[in-house]
Image 1 (spheres, chains in turn cyan, brown):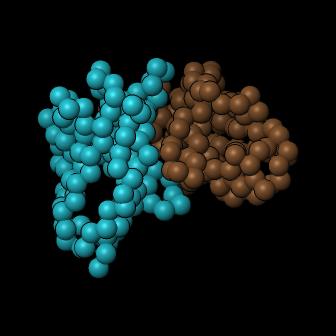
Image 2: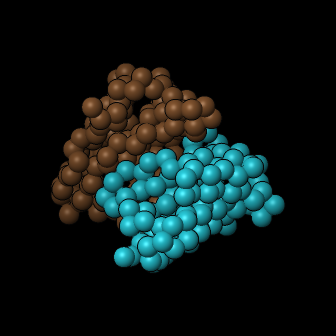
Length: 110
Length: 119
C-alpha cells in the first residue's frame, strides 16, 4: 500500500457545487496532515492544515479520520478559481520530510 | 521579491550533458529541499539540507549531487543526463526540518520550479 493515496480525478463540477476529496495514509502514527494546492505549471502552496478536531477556512473544511486513516477536504460553493490540483500530505518520512500524495485534479466549469 | 527563487525555469538539453539548477531563499530559513515532480505529478523528496548539512538523501542516482554553500542556497547538479530525468524540479525551504506549520508561518515554501527536458 502506498504511503499516501488520492483519487487523481479529474473531478469536473459546476460552479456553486460542493465537492469533497479524500486522501488515505498508511502510517497510523502520522501526526502531520495538510492540504496543498497546485495550479497548472505552478508550485504547490499550502492551502490549510488538518487538525484532529477538524477545521474550517471560509468555504474549505478539512477533516481527519484516524480510525479509517484518511483526511478529507470539502469545498463549498465552488468557484472557477478553485480549479487546481489538490495535494494531500499524510505524515512524515523518517527524516521528518512531508509525504505528499499525487494530487486530485479539480475542474470547476461555468 | 520572490521568497524561493530557482534558475533556470526552463531547460532543454541533450542526453549525456551535465547541468545545474540554482536555488536561493531570502526567508532566513534553516532547511532547504529539492523535490522532483514527474509526468505523473508525483512530488517526491530528493534531498534536504539543514544549515548546510545534508539530512535527507533519498534513493536517487549519484548523478545527482546537491551542494549548499550556505543556508540560503541549495544547488542541484546533474551529470550525464538521461531521458528519465525529464521532470519539474522544485526547490523549497522551511524554518525547521519538517517543514510543517506547527506554528503560524512555519510552512514549506516552494520555488516556481525548473522544467527540465532531456532530448
